[in-house]
Image 1 (cartoon, rainbow, N blue to C red):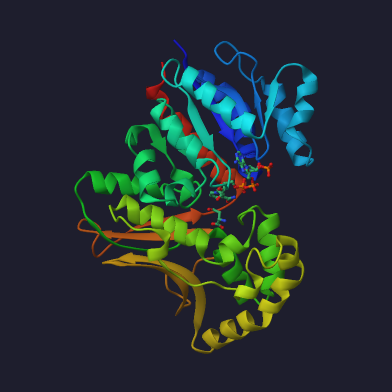
Image 2 (image 1 turned 90 degrees about the vertical axis):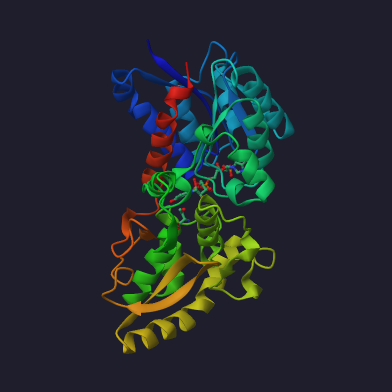
Amino acid sequence: MKKVISLILMGCGGVGRQLLQHIVSCRPLHAKQGIHLRVVGVSDSKSFVVAPDVSTMELADNSLLQLCRIKSDGSSLHTLAASGQVEVFTDSESTKKIIDVAALLGKSTGLALVDCSASSETIPLLTQAVDLGCCIVMANKKPLTSTMEDYDKLISHPRHIRHESTVGAGLPVISSLHRILSSGDPVCRIIGSLSGTLGYVMSEVEDGKPISEVVRSAKTLGYTEPDPRDDLSGMDVARKALILARLLGWRINLDDIKIECLYPKEMAPGVMSVEEFLGTGLLLLDKDIKERVSKASLSGNVLRYVCVIEASRCEVGIQELAKDSPLGRLRGSDNVLEIYSRCYNDQPLVIQGAGAGNDTTAAGVLADIIDIQDLFP
Ligand SMILES: NC(=O)C1=CN([C@@H]2O[C@H](COP(=O)(O)OP(=O)(O)OC[C@H]3O[C@@H](n4cnc5c(N)ncnc54)[C@H](OP(=O)(O)O)[C@@H]3O)[C@@H](O)[C@H]2O)C=CC1
Ligand SMILES: N[C@@H](CC=O)C(=O)O
C-alpha cells in the first residue's frame, strides 16, 4: 500500500521552487519507499493554483515544473490557467480556497501546509489549519516568532509540526535539540553563528572585499532574506534565537532579545526601498565595516555575528573572536552551533555545515515532509 502525503506549498520563490524540483526528481526514490507526495496546490503572494478536484486530482509534475519556470521568469501564476489543467484564485479568494481545501482534506486524507514564504500573512491560515487537523511544515520563521498565543496554537499538536529549516537551513538543529530535551537533559547554553548571510559576509570582508559587494553576491547565491536588511539588522538571527529559546521553554518575544543592527536607521525599510539600499545605501557601510575588521585583525581576531542563549540572556550581535576559535574558523555560509547540557557539558554537541541556500533548505523541508508520513493514511 502506497502512503500518500497531500500538500499545499505556500511560497514559490527560491526555496519553494527548489522544493518542487526535489519532489519531482525524488519520484523514483519515493516510489521505492512506498511514498507519494501529492501536491494539490501552490500559492504565492497573489494567487493560488490548485487542482480542479483536490479529492481525486493533484498538480501534475509537468504543471509543477512549468510553474517553476513561470515564477523564475517573473511571470504571474495566472499564466498557468491557460493549460486548463488547474484553477487559479487571486487575493482573498486564494486564502478562502486554501482553507476550503484544508477543511476538506485535513481530517480525511490528511494535508500538510508547507510554508516556504517569508511572510507573516500565512499565520492566520496556519493557525486555522491546525484546528482543521492539518500538519504544518515551515521554512518560514515568522509564524513561530509571532505572539506566544500564535506559537502555542501552532505547536498544540507537536507531532503535526516540523520546522527544521527555520534554524540552520538543512542542518539537524531542531531535531537534535528535541532529542536532548526529550531525554530530560537540560540545555543550559547555546552559542553559535546562525546566519549563512552574515557568516559569508564576515568571512568575505575579512578577505578584503567591501560589504556592499559581498551582500549583493549573498543575495545572488540565495543566502539572504528577500530584503537583505532582515539579515543585516540581526532580525533573522534573532528569529532563529527566539525559535531555539522557545523550544527550551522560554516564554519570550522578539522584544526581549538584544539585537545589534549593522546599518543606521536612515536605511531602514520604510525609509529606503530594497533597490536603493542595495544600490546606494550599502556603499555607505563599506568604510565602517572595513575599519572594524582591520581593528580586530590587529589583535589577531576576526568579527563574527554570534547568537548566545544562556541563563536569562538571549542576544545576537558582532563579537571579536580569536581567528583560531571554532567560530573564528568558520568560513562562507556555514553555520555552527554549540549546545551545552548536563550530558554535553565539557564537550558540547557541535552541529556545523552549510547554513543557507535554496538547495539545502529545500532538502530540509522535504525531509520534514517525509518525516510526517505516519500521520497520513
Ligand atoms: N534561502 C535560504 O537559505 C533559507 C531560507 N529560509 C526561509 O525560507 C523562506 C523562503 O525563502 P526564499 O525562497 O529565499 O524567499 P523568496 O523571496 O525567494 O520567496 C518567497 C515566496 O513567498 C511568496 N509569498 C509571499 N507572501 C506570501 C503569502 N502570503 N502566501 C504565499 N506565498 C507568499 C512570494 O510570492 P511572490 O513570488 O509573489 O513574491 C515568493 O514566492 C523564508 O521564510 C526564509 O527565511 C530558511 C532557511 C534558509
Ligand atoms: N537569510 C538566512 C537564510 C536562512 O535562514 C541566512 O542567511 O541564514
